[in-house]
Image (cartoon, rainbow, N blue to C red; front, side):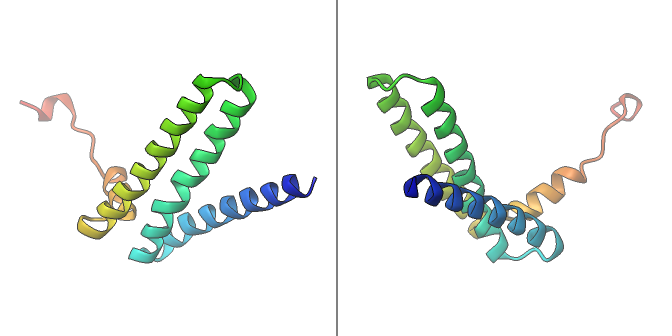
Length: 110
């Protein structure tokens, strides 16, 4: 029971921190918020997918392989996003740029 309570507390904490980092990045974009998003969003996603796998995939060799692949993908995602933040425009600016892409009308293409 204590393990379950600790797991719920950690998951809720990461969820709250993720939302806080998203709001903070939208209001006051900085490298610190981008780095927080680069770590928290993949972790939040990892734990969500891990729970789905735990609930629906039998505990077999396949589960061990899928779990290992998920860990590698999560780690690579975090490292890639941190690199993107450090050496390019960062997550917050990339999302802002995507939101500001103007739709090109067909008559403008010719």
